[in-house]
Image (cartoon, one colour):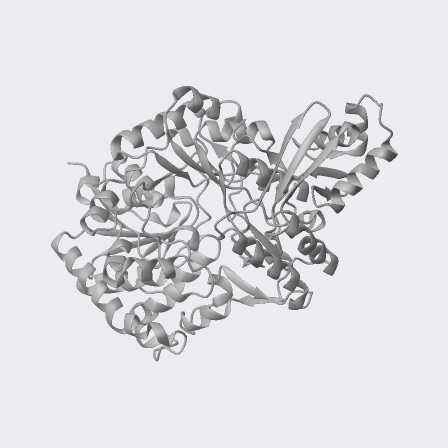
Length: 588
């Protein structure tokens, strides 16, 4: 019998991962370890806490991306007497959960482990999963002193992983970087009794250090993730939602970030290099997961849609006529035909990286798009029924007061388009260009001090940092107010609308954006022709002049565009103008 058969492995996802989908980290690494010959199980232990404290309470904590409330809840159980806030000053309203539910939850997990132990327990840690993982590892080691623990995930990238290994005594090994190769190599070394510290990406508590694990290049060679345990456990606990979004990975890295790293983005750590699965492999994987789990909703964990998919994958999905619902992150410079293709292929939700309605601010971000392109995506996504997740952000070095007064003035003309989820300051993230260029001006986000003991170097383990913006906070009051009103208008019985109908040299625009001021505009001849030239995408006056075969003087075109802008029917962005009204007949 090979040594691998004796090394039983348990892969664990702890709170506060959300409960409405399985962990792709567990699904993928369990399949990789199994292919390498190891007996492996997964444990979506986050579900058990949701069942204990209530799904709504759990979801509220899991969705919170501000102060480290989730990590604070487990801090005492993770660090014992070294925990910095034993009296629960940080969040007194959650003291009962911290004092009673958390210990009982961990005891129940430890009891379950006793009934089916493993020699290696591996934890994946992203965002607020650290201290829950440390707390369970500590308990399991107290009961099973020979247990080997392995940690990895985004929270262990860069210098964070070695610092955790140095300071948290329940960690035996950590994998820094992508684990596709390093993790099975580590398991093989443990099974063979050899020293794993020479494996790239493996850091050991017993000493030795290693470089980051090299990124996986051929994603087509990756196995299909195994999510069986999530579906079984969620169903048993009464937490299986209708229409689960099944995670899929079709690419890694960011092709845009490899060229122009967005200044506030800390994703991908040091492995920005873009790699994608072949369209054929993606279609096969979706089909296999749909059959295996009886689900048709898939959330791509990719940071950005591969541009090749616009000409290969998406047309293939249209031809397959599958009925999938897909989520993707995309770049916001998509045109109308591409948005229509996304919708036809089953993409019902996207995160397009829209973070501002100001072209000067977008330049500061290095987004590679303009405000008019962002607004155009809002238009066509809404028209073709694609839900957007987007935000307005501020706090960038070099921004001006005018950047935000202009945005506040533009918002009332956009209320017929889907509003942003939030409007607020940027997160200062590790690995972002801003983090690299503002050393000495930033400090770890304040809640880290309520979570981690004094012997942990917060500068080395923090992912989020605090920074004082250059402009006073009231600079953003106008955007805050108008976005609040925009979001409220979408909760009204009748949402705002702005639509047009056209005939040759004639256009009617119905304006229902503002209650009590509804009405219809009618434009003929040259005015109608000019407006319709702005419908598909942002254009300049010179482009309109060319498209109208030079029969209308540029000066007259400018006058007409200025009047449309005054009426709030156009979005003007430097030399480019964009019609705001959408076709009255849907889906064309």
